[in-house]
Image (tube, rainbow, N blue to C red; front, side):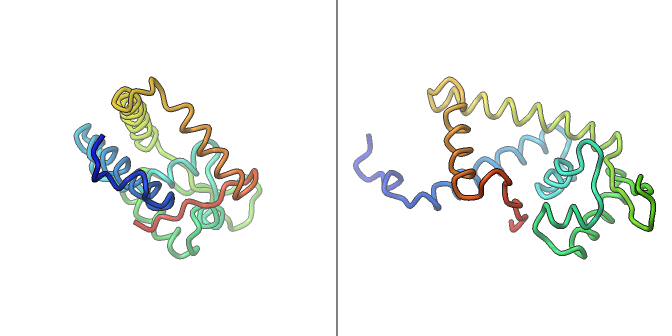
Length: 157
């Protein structure tokens, strides 16, 4: 072990931030290599929220922790790119439901494969065999601080 290694003494918040940045950068790079370079991480967050039945713009804003205007801009951009569409809300009224298109589902398939491959590689590189213990501990940490309703993961990068 290196004697000048300062990582073990680094504050937990900084370690979590560094790990997040490194993992996100590697994931984004691998997505680009897989031909999926046109989207940013925030778009992936939107896709995760819209999976299943979709969401209204207001619901999307709440889940992202951004303003309705910011969520609307994201939806407008993704709609122009062909990744989402607005449909009449099943309960009627003026509300619209934002849903994923086939292009978004295709992206999610590639992104899921890239992420699972990356996680498996990281498990091998760290010598842990899998990341289930890390996932369990991080889940405990989030629940200890936020309860059963995870807070929005604000796209601040």
